[in-house]
Amino acid sequence: MEIRLLHTADAHLDNPLSGLGKVGNARRKEIARAFERVVSIAIEKGVTALLLAGDLYHDPSARSSPWVKSLFKKLERHGIHVLAIPGNHDELPACKAYMEEFPPNVYIFSGEELTPYTRIEGLSIYGVVSTDKHRRVLKGFRKVDAPGFHIALVHGQYRLTDQFAENYCPIEPEDIELSGLDYIALGHFHNFMDCSHGRTRAFYPGSPARLDFSDIADRVVLLITLNDAAVSVEQVPLEDRQYITVEADINDPDHIHHQVASIEDEAACVRVRLSGITGDPSISSSIVDDLVEKYSDKFFYFCVEDKTDVMIGDLDDDFTIRGKFLQRMRQRVQDARDGEDALRVRYALSYGLAALRGARLK
Image 1: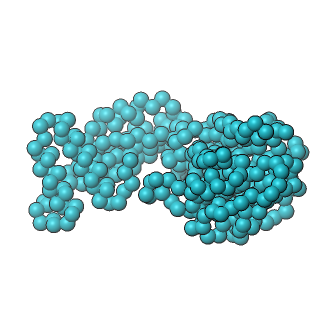
Image 2: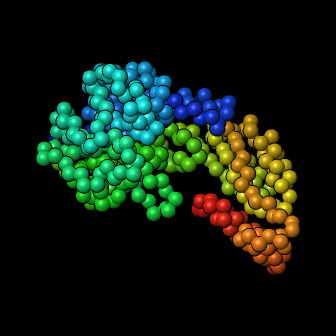
Image 3: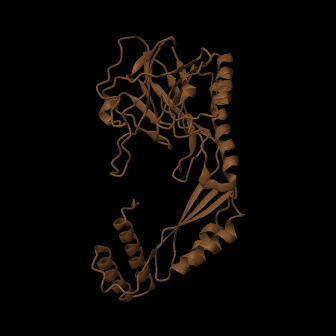
């Protein structure tokens, strides 16, 4: 027996995208079309079920719910089931759309325990709604004693080594490995990630469309094939607009312009993130204004984030850690052997000030 499923998550329909300004509405429509494309792929691939692992909607208002229902009815006409869990953006009971009447092919998990849905031959599919964001929903889980394949839908944060990572409904590697499940359809992280451990395959598909500049990976939906031999996972590509970040130092304006001008994709969303040290705050303001004036009309969306630090002129009476650090680094700049050495010191100064602010360093 072979069963095929399609796994997606984090569509975030109705996202206001207020940061995109005048192009926000156009981008919202693109995000909706990306989800519609997922539905089309489910039909093209002839899957048994579409798995939605949370945050279908960006907020509980779920204004797109009538349109989403029409897509679910389209899947019903092709004999395709829809199994979904709410996420942290469209959680129950706030999101009333999940409690409405759906076509018979749709099942929304609403319990706080991983309970199985067994109405599809050969499958036991588990889903959970977590009202405790600190709870490890997979900890101690054991599948029911039933033949066929065992699949779970979980919306939560896989444990990363990064100390600044969010800890929403944490998922530990051992929770995956000891679950005994064949596949875990994860949601919450917006880029593709393989979290498989032991014999259990577990993946984040990422959002169907990029939602902000942190969504750097290619967009995909996951085609899961289950048979007696193995569980295979295929990344089916989704076309999407590029989000490009240009990291630039305030002390090299010519290079900043060169970096931006070399971007050939005019359909991209482009962000310039300025860093570095300046003794005059008007310098960064001038560079920002110049960049915005020159490139705002070249790309679908363009913005500049000014993360520069100002080197305060008189630091002799500043006895804070920041003040002492700046005093030392100012002297290092003055003692630099050449321009390249001075630039390295400025980079070190920039990273040091960012660390003192508690910023996340890369």
